[in-house]
Image (cartoon, rainbow, N blue to C red; front, side, top):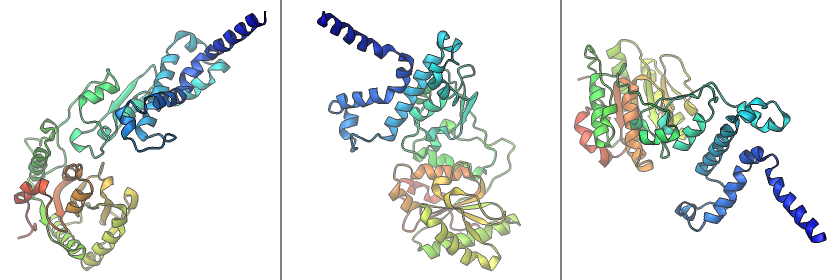
Length: 354
């Protein structure tokens, strides 16, 4: 008798796992992953090579967990018996997640995000609309984890269709040619290179280059080129100077201002990418904030150092910079031009005015 009672109690305990099973289907994802990770820690290359504590998650793992939670939630919300009774108290956890959903999700610079991150964003659309838009250029990816092909985008959602836009609306013909040459060097997707309208008369000028310069010499040279731009345009256009780290922003702005004061101009430090200053001010940014900017003139300070710090991405930063500048592009190397882009040296001049 006691044995039979014990067996029934054990059976009832086992059945309790199915009480609120829908909730466990979502909330138990982290626990399930912890068990999976423990079982696979010695058998999977990803875990063997990861120098992480067993108690810590990598960014990729966290994204995967968030994605599975969202997709499991969406699976449950699509069930008719739950949809009819969603206001019931037992579905509170699902309602809380559903409250995060939006009728439409739009992602700019999508190629800087990983497949998992984009999939999480797509999973935040409402079940009725499922409206998801993403725009970006694979050639302008400046993160290691960003997506690299349409095949990866299709993994995010089979419903995504690709539309190409190659019309250039701000760039001179000279810089468009330079951007194409740079794209060929980095073996990028030439089909995504922008095309100028046939009726465009914006020929522009060649980019300028300074090598073997100290930091003061670099600031003086940039200031001289800015003065040339002002004289050519007859009024002060929008100008950005890009440095390689946040801690370089203010020192460069101060050095530039020293050399620009003679022509009643100044440089402002746009720390953390904040577009401060008056319309005529020269703005100094950390290069990581280059995306989304548009200027008449763009200067890169320390391209050779950037190549040392980010050898896999520095030429992409240059490509993005070349497509941010409308007419004038300048590049400073404190030592010499990085080997990877040396074939482009003949495309540069040292100054714009003869």
